[in-house]
Length: 409
Ligand code: GTR
Image (cartoon, rainbow, N blue to C red):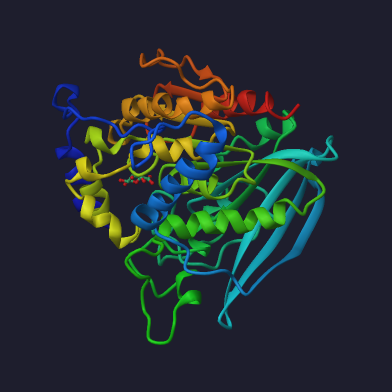
């Protein structure tokens, strides 16, 4: 799975701060035609719109049309999950278009003490049954990536991978702090391979079409779409209040794009999202646009290819993606050893997005000095860099919970 070439790219990338090219970042509050944006109305109606459209057509790709039908079904519910601490629900979500459909499954845990709880919504990489040891969680039937360490062969999930990713999901911490979790296996929306014959894309094809058009959605945009449709269910559930959309790495890119395109998300958390996520493309530190488009040709719209090794000509950079989340809470987190994702580029991006939060009287990140390791800055825009590798840890969740808690009272 692209592994050889990706490893090679990772070892050959630039990790030297002195080799970061000099660049001028496009200002988030100056329109493409050169007008200065000075208030919320100009931001919302002009600038936000043009930035959103640019990302939509030139970066992640447009969703071609509306669905014909959206439906969900409660498959299973219980009051005794996590030793009686939590209520569990498993929901099937069905999307229909042109007489074709896909169904994906959302696992939800809610703290029993609260009649309505805020939740984190996030995709998992290997199936809902991997995030918990709970024997009642159904095993995905969808294609999954093989992983020797996790005992996944033949692209099939089985009982043997139950609970293998519990360390990435601090579910008990969430429950103990009044938060719920909603999670979905991302491969049920679009399997993560360079193939547009499966997943959600074909629902929208016209006769004879076999892949999206140049400006249309790649996989990241499809995953974001899946999160947004999951929100249709979540906002209808009387036991759920606010939804913070979360994602790690490629799924952090998808969470950011979901938060940018769907204002129903109360907040967004990007964990180690890197290139095409929170990191500034112009720094060319670690993963670059050319590299990501080569390793993962299906992630972005084909129109994004013209920026391979051509970052200077991009009229936007990723701080403008972050700004699309404003004025809602936004948390960007990096890991010290995750140089491939360019921690400094992720941090600077939060700084350069913050002027938009300022228009709303919200506090962003007001310094270009990176904080010390393991010393989070938590304003409406929050950032931390922790020790360790590319991963999601208890430390990350403790901070997300503490910060999110300040917005739910
Ligand atoms: C890497 C990719 C990154 C990031 C990561 C992940 O191989 O280059 O952009 O998405 O995968 O999702 O774990």
